[in-house]
Image (cartoon, rainbow, N blue to C red; front, side, top):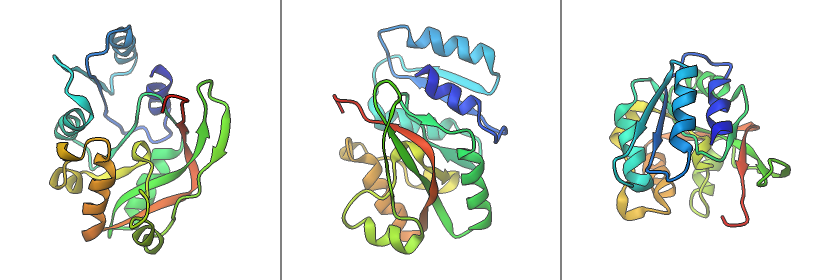
Length: 191
């Protein structure tokens, strides 16, 4: 989790608010997050009073955000330094697009690279691919904030909340994945 947050703190795109929520962890997570928040004033740290689960926690974080774009991130993955800069650059030059993901390196528990994804790139490829499989790595996306706020996650689709959301968004908007890999997606034996 610390490595994931630090990978966002170290982005080349510096104009960030970093919203982090501890969903009732029972270990030292909150203390580590608190120390990171003291280190970086861009971090806005929240702690749920009870475990809300991914859907409610994500929707709360969307409500708390104030930026033009919302980038997703999970606690066990790593964003490479140029990820957000490249995604914002794409979105700024492609106004008809609502969502931008990235290809990803697959890493194991220790962070060793075990593979590389090749996701659909342009909107035409994404629109076809979505009918067969999820076209984005959930924690790698950057979405226009107004689109996210109009299309929140739905609790009845927990465990597929991202795929259902992308289908709704892609029905009305364009989406793409950057061809380069700016993200490390951790695949655990328990996944």
